[in-house]
Each structure stands twice: as C-alpha cells, then as structure tokens.
Image (cartoon, rainbow, N blue to C red):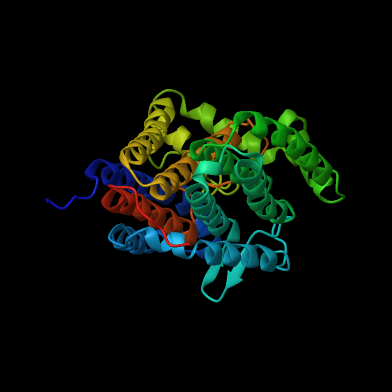
Length: 370
C-alpha cells in the first residue's frame, strides 16, 4: 500500500499565514521596537527564529502518531490546570495575571489550557461515544472539564480566553454527539453561573470598564477608549487598497501594542480592505481544509482533535478581528500566526503538525486501551 503523503494544501496555507504574519509583524513592530529597545529588529528577529523552530516542530509532530495524546490526555490536562493556578500568583500586567514568567521569557498558560481541553474532551468523546447523548456524559462531564479551566481563566481575568474555551468545548460537544436539548438546559445554568462570577468584586469592575469602553470609546478618546479609537482610525485610513507596506501612521507610537493584539489594525491600514479580505480568506481556507481532513478521518479521537484545533484557530482569529473593529469589547486576544509571541506560535505550529499527523495515521477506526 502506498504511504500517504502530507496534505500539501494544508501545509501551503500554514506557510502562507506564517509568511504574511512575519511580514506584517516586521512592518507593525519596527517603530515601537526601536523606541523601546533601540533595535528595529527586536521583535521580528525573535519571531523569525520561533517560526523556523516551529516549522521543524510541525513536521516532527506530523510524523508522530497522535495516539500518544490519548494516552497522556489526563496528564496534559493536569499540567494545564497547574499552570493556570500558578499564574494567579504572578505579578499583574495591565491589571491581569495571564503571563507566567520564565528565565527565557514569558507565556500564557491559557494557550496550553486550550490544547489540553481539546485533548481531554476528544478522549471523553471517544471512549464514551455511545453515551454522549446522555446528560451525564454528553453534558455534565464535559461542562465540568470546561468549567474548571474557565473558572481559573476568568480569575486572571481573561474573559476572551474564557469565551474561547467554552466556544471550542461547545463545538466539540456537538461533534462528539451531545444531545441538543440537554445542552440548552446546561447553557441556561452556565449563563447564570457566569453572571454570578462576573458580579465578584474586582472582576465586575474589570468587565464593566471594558463594556463601557466598547459602547462608546469616543467618550474617553484619550483614556480608556484610546486603544480602540486609534485602531478604528488605522482601519479607516487604509481604505480599499491601503497605504502600502511600511506606510502606517498609527504604528508611529499612536496605536498601543501594534505588534500584538492590534496587528490586524495595521494590516488593514497598510493593505486596505483587499488585503484584510485576503487574510480572512487564508484563515477561512485553513479551517475549511482542516474540516475536510477531519471529515475523511475514520478515527473518532483524531477527528475530534482536528475539529478542536482548527476551530480554535478560526474562533481566535474571529475574536481578534471583532475586538480591533470594536464589534465586541476589548478583552485582549492575539491574532494567530500574526501577533508577536514565541510560545503562542510554537503551540500553533505544533497543533498544525498534529492535524497533519491525524491525516497520516487516522485512516481507520482505532482501538484504544483505557
């Protein structure tokens, strides 16, 4: 039997996203990079190294049988929970405790938590697939797994991460076969719980501040609404065709975090509506190709893994675009493949490798030892 080759279309889309992401990061970051570090290449040089390492990891993971994640799912989940607890004791940055600082840099444990949740739900959906339409296994057990992670992320506070976690989990619930009626009952209960949590002092003030800024950022254009106002000015300045690569004015120390959460605003300014549409199309192509891989995968665990991973990338891109266009409140979420962050890029490319691994080894239903 001829050995199955890696999905060239999927790899091509990933390579395009990485390449365009690096190009936009260089353009968006060289001013603030020089201002902060007197080195215009500070951000892009590091990100380029992470991109090269990430590509090596992607192809290595593509050759690694994804069955190993089933075996260690509980351990991966436990490590993620441990990291989410540890980060709550870290010094706050901009009013939130989201970053765990190491000797070589920092990263957000929520990035690990998203992957851990995908793995553990995929495992539950595989071993309990005949019972997934019951309330106990299809709803309660999965909500407990999601709820534990979400409670820790909301305490950071990381509202967008919490929403993303529940969104990914919800998608996996349906793919795994959860009953719609029980899900609606659980959703009402969950909404009540979230409402209660948001009322906790500190979290309530944080959420209220973000909501007020979202409703009318121009009411305080030099204060809490400053970032969104500058983002909207950048998007508006781009017009249809943009001002050209390197031509952004908002990255000249007007728009905060142009290399991170608001890099898409700079992309809109420099590439215009046409360029922004192409970027959105690339993400849509990645998700579409990922779902195609999931559809032709015969193994339940592998199929759920792929759906969870590509859903995470698609939803995160949607949320980031919604934030920078002020469609939803600013909750601090980065753009996959574009925003500066080595650990985030490494995690993303590793997950792309897992998708390729599933396409390689998921040609038939597999039997797992529990």
